[in-house]
Image 1: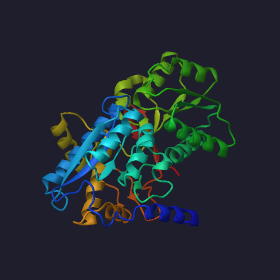
Image 2: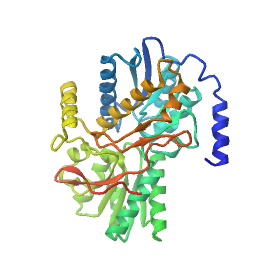
Image 3: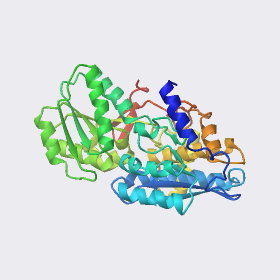
Length: 387
């Protein structure tokens, strides 16, 4: 760790001198309160709902087995509707009224950028948000941990790989007009800069938009043969449906925010051939290993629905919390949990998750993504992790 990062870490840690000695908020003899700010009613509820369900499933399993050192985990979920203002109010409620010990899997970059300062300033753990933005782990901070590869890093690698291997001449970008889209843009521009090529065209849309006809017309008019999509599920389907409706067949690559079974379920034939960045494989029942097949069965039994990759991510994030809290011991404190997490090593599992590993000098658990493509109505992995 360089001198600047040592200084920052020391200053921040020094600002929280009582964490390892005070009774932890949200922890009693009987329970641990965990909070999450998600989208259950807005434009990315298709992602937020299965994440919540996956977390609830894992926490209920832990509670049924006796809890964590005898404490039950209680997940308190607040719906932001993908609105940063609502997210700030939700975070304050979870801190002040519910006394959350930690926040896990907060959903959406605009939401996380607005609510993270509320959480961290209150001295609470900010764990594994669904916002691969570098500010979720940099500068190094005792309370901030991220295990999703950052947009800028994995989109730089994915864009560079696609352009190098497929020889595109005019790379373009369709992006959500907020922190999410801007981070993706930085990655795309970095990739093209390394290849000595310009970004041929870019156009944005407002969060929650469903009509992207003018944006698609602009990109088509610019002669784009490859379009990077900084979109989520609905917007990904809308963009590709409009392109195919007009007879435009340019290749498109979406971030992990659009890598979802709902994309091909909603888009059908229009999204065939779409490329995406994969965090982990989708839990398709066909071809599943024995452990995964059993997990799918239990999920279906509980929710009367098929799981998707977001269900798996919610489940695995909750599992990481349970395992770390167990390892931290019966006297659970915020500082003790954080220092334990810095020593944890989460190996690859039956879901096909990457290895997650943290350290006292690095709070980003994974840096890489893989390429996938929709083929015959399903996502198929087509590369190893790209660096």
